[in-house]
Length: 230
Picture 1 (cartoon, rainbow, N blue to C red):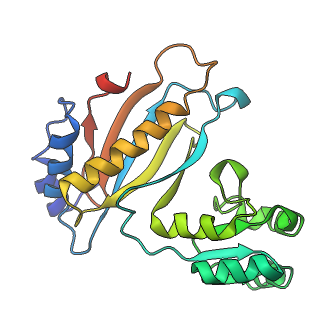
Picture 2 (picture 1 turned 90 degrees about the vertical axis):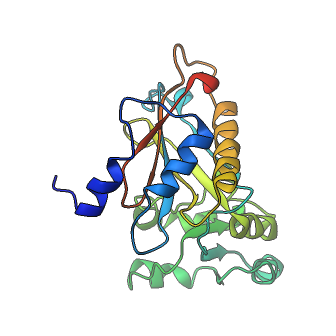
């Protein structure tokens, strides 16, 4: 894969043979974020889990102390008082059955997170084929199927992110923007890792966190030392 000049230059600052401590890695990731836009800083955590086994699945959510730096559009499936609560909490879109054809037939997907009250999951279930592959299906483990829609919306707006294993047993999550301070990135990363450590499956034998890499949207990856999190 051919890389651009900026990437090649930025990559020179990273020693691929080194695993960095968190403060050093956060300083470095800001340094190698050289795109013209405010790049997202992502963490890629390779685990020793085998997601094919239900008891080794990892899925949850955590509120990052400094948010993600991204404004998130929330769609809530709710009725009556719960719909009013969702709107008051700042949800961009609130509705019920009438949204199904709009999403299914018109391909409307102008939202980033979907929240639903439990009684609406029958309706939302009809959209499984559309929302599922995009990772937008509400889930109780992620706190997006709840009667407390106001709290769910506020948490998401405050920087709540969902983490889950992909097919290769890696967790990919944003931890902020290149414009964040090193301390903000470190705080967010620490909060994320603590949540993932708590989510360790009890059936897992051997190493849990195999490798952790952070990278900006357009920049090189920086490997972190996993010794502290072993």
